Image 1 (cartoon, helix red, strand yellow):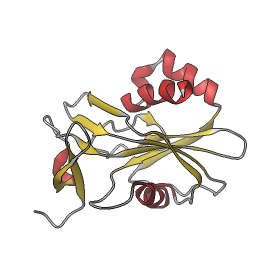
Image 2: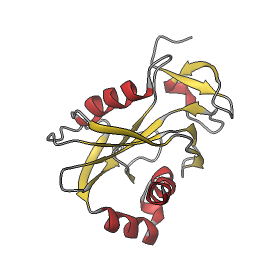
Image 3: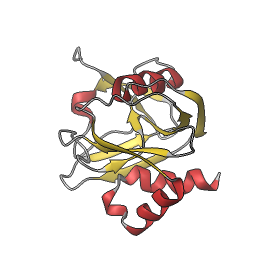
Length: 173
């Protein structure tokens, strides 16, 4: 086992199977692992969308939800979301809610890298000024939720596959 960041491998039913090195987990045969997504709004009801840094291994330069991440072994999901919000965007969250606990997806990017994640989806709010980490986020926008849904419907190829699946699921709940 490497000394690097670890991700949690899971069975189809979510049972923890073990861990593996995050640096090696994403490839053409990515095993199912635990992740999370978060959709952050502001006091005006706008949603934060971010454009993934060009150096990202999967879906570089693609617009996506506010942020995503992987909990560490034995790390509480809510704690992992709060940690990632601070690390990636420089913000603290309020009103953190688990919105889609069983969300799961499988997608392959143009380079053949597979995402295979059990990915609970959270919603939250922040009133903090964003200080995005340039290794994670190259650009961001606060957008009207209806306009985002229209843009994703019109040009799904411009957005991460998980965002295109999460938006309608969030709207339907």
